Amino acid sequence: MSLCAVPAAEARTLPNAVLLAVANDTTGNGTDGSPAGSGTRPNIHQIITQFEQAIAPYETIHPTQIAHPPLPTQSLPTSHAAIDQALQQTLQAYKQATQSDKQAQAQLQTAFNAYINALQLFVQVGDLDILTQQTPDSTAVVSYLEDALYTQAEVSADFQILQQAHAAGDNSELLAALLDMTQLEQQKVSDIKTATKILAKMTSTLQAGLSD
Figure 1 (cartoon, rainbow, N blue to C red):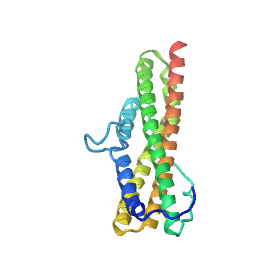
Figure 2 (figure 1 turned 90 degrees about the vertical axis):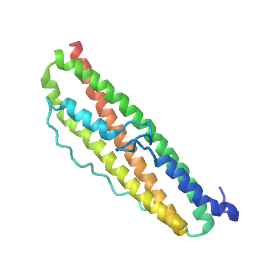
Figure 3 (figure 1 turned 30 degrees about the horizontal axis):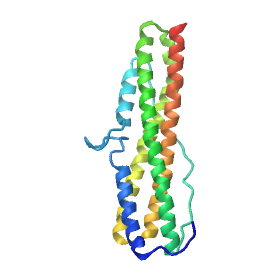
Figure 4 (figure 1 turned 90 degrees about the horizontal axis):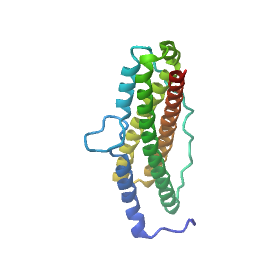
């Protein structure tokens, strides 16, 4: 895409389009206690609670903070045309990240359901020492999911900044907030996927124990 000047009408409507698109993608995220009716995605807070309740008779976990490298600092364009182009590109990246978020949360719900089903069978006939041995994995699952909640809170804070930048007509600040939100969404997706992989491994261990 060339850095040619954006038509004046498009330049005025682009910030509005960014705000509307981001608001639509952010509402009803399903990560935490969203208002009823705001979305249909799994609620990660509820998954954490149900997971902890399920393993409580067999494991004692102490979630830890997940260490992430600082988000990379990106140099922002300065010309109006370059800022508008970057806004369009970053908005597409943000939409892709939120779509990946939806898919990751759906996969998490499936993995969680499979684990609970395996656990309910395993505790009836399996070696409960295996559950104790899974404590580090259980700790990691909750740690990564809690990190996803923290990251979503940061996304929500950035959305407030984005709204303020839009109200002030500051497209440079609008772009900075959107870039940060995109990177945070990508980090959150990574957290959810990691937790899902660990859950799947734990489920496989329990299923193997049932077949012994």
